[in-house]
Image (cartoon, rainbow, N blue to C red; front, side):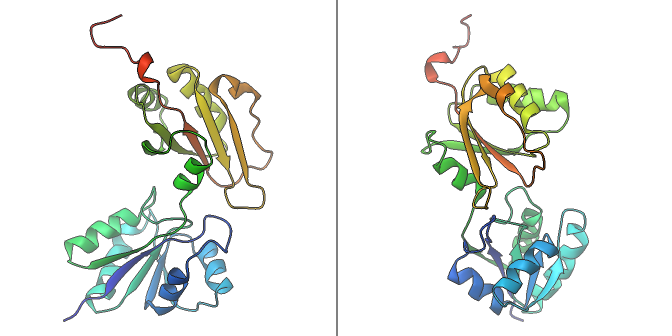
Length: 235
């Protein structure tokens, strides 16, 4: 029996116009759409007059729902996978489903599009030719400090995700471990209140969080200059 295909579909990170013709066409043609955030995705689908069946797929139900999605795929049904915003599988549960699909020889088809990582990088003014995406840092204080110490000697531009409620505290911790470097704080990218702050880590105390912060923040941090890297055996 033929198998269906899993389409990994990128959707807007804010502005509804940031979607490809191919993504809209695919969302209309698949048999079912697996969505991380039903409220957000329903707005997008309604905006583009898409009325396909949807199934809720998130971090808390990914194991049980993946089985259901696989049953559709193995029954020759095509499934579209979307995250709450942007490109699926980047800091979201889509990765688990992709691995399960591969284990069952399901064909994967990426539909590229918006990414907060790349959107923030290209307006940062920091070297974009070599960069590292770290996602969210560990929540525990000890684990976070250890990870930052491991990243402190990284020469590539570093990109992180952070909650607006924790961003100032995280920036202070980065400053304590990294010392002073250039940093870019990208907030509400592509949305009405889009804001990109270019500053240095030493100025973190002057950075004020909004009264009603929303969404995730992307931090772009300058890598260490090669001249400052300590050679093993030297002081």
